[in-house]
Image (cartoon, rainbow, N blue to C red; front, side):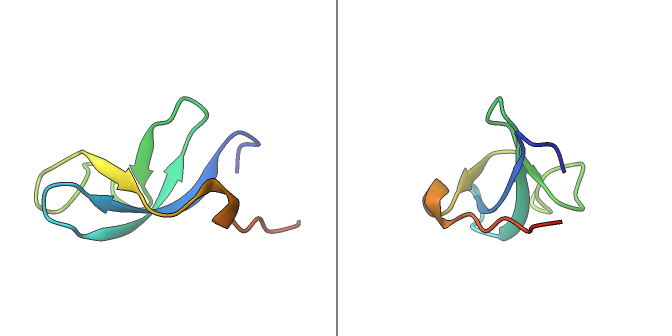
Length: 59
């Protein structure tokens, strides 16, 4: 995982489906395992929680 990339929960703004997502340094939200966005067809997501909620794995 890139140093500037976070993993968070994100919710589709159209249908409310929740996804594990990557948040890149430029703020792009990309659902993990879904390159085409949400199954409803939307590509707009809202990150859930605060950035302090992020748990980082030590490698």
